[in-house]
Length: 502
Image 1 (cartoon, one colour):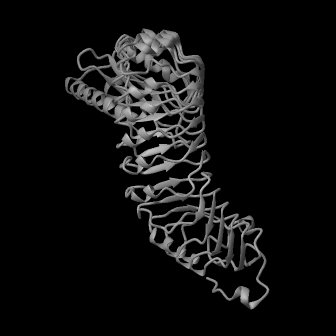
Image 2 (spheres, rainbow, N blue to C red):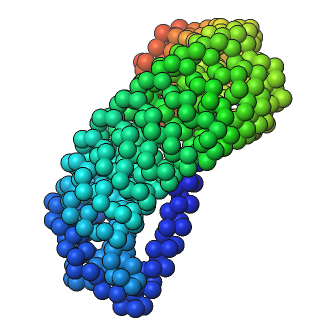
Image 3 (cartoon, rainbow, N blue to C red):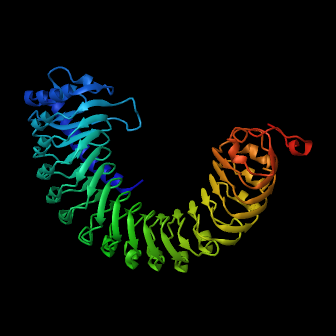
């Protein structure tokens, strides 16, 4: 779970405690709804042509403070201070259809405006939403809002948290947002926004979380993200079109916990100062055009548990110092680079907490190793290498494995019967090797497998006649010597069909 969640959760926890206390006082003192605010809320309700959440059905009568769902009022002034309309993002049957009424700007005492996961609220963000002098939280997430982000939102001088993610907004980020010095969070991920990061963002020194992911932003990553941003713990610029090198200044963000620059067009080396990010727990640089060697300074990242530098052009071997560093590592993904590892790095076997290894396409040669990896491992991907030899029986020691992919190698011999003892397996890919013999009868115990591929080997005999193996597509068994039984044609001789069917 990333640090932005905790930042926002803590922020809303404090806010909710304050608002709930106000609400309780309001109920005790018999606070009645301001007619002006009630009219503004009813105008919003009128702009919603369909509500399957049932929230707006409670908006009846005169007392919006105590009887209307999602509304909270100040205990003495009777003015609305919180409007929270939210539903589950995973429930497609729960939504509101309509537009955002500009009348909401009449709620001049509003401190928190949250309209999230309504899915079918469309139209523009009203320009009048800049007229909230006391607004600290503006969340309009996971709707269908279109058009540009109004530059006048920069007038919300009290704003602490802004999230417009999961809409269809386009255009550039307003530079005016850089004039709100107290901003703690900006999230505009999953939109159609473009252009560079505004230079005015250099002024947002209080920023704790910045999420610009899944947009069309371009240009270089600004160098002003440096030691002045000591509060920044979460920075996600992934899935954009950023170019140029990774600025060395990013390595002075001593408080950053999560850093993702993946799926861009970044070039050049990883800065050697990467080891300065002492607090870093998650780093993703995947799917870029980065090259060069892996810096030894990676070994200084003692809190790093997730590392993904896959699908770049890194070369050379992995520094031996990584064996003594990276003590918190849980997941490592190095696939599809230009490494010349030669063999699987032995230091990986020393990481007792390691759960996921992806060394696909890392030019690994030589004998397939004995399984001396940590028993905590849940996922192994050694596919698309040049490994030879047999899959060892010691694989049965890996009781926690849910995924094994050794496809596209030069493995030979038979599939170990002991693999059937790993009953938690969900993903098996042994395709495009030189494996022979049968698919072990013990595989009938593997009831949780949802993907299996034995294609293009030298296997023969009866396919285990139990679910799921007898219902997988025939292509999963294609291009072998003489596999038979469902989903392939029946076996023709006793030798092939002697395996028990279940």
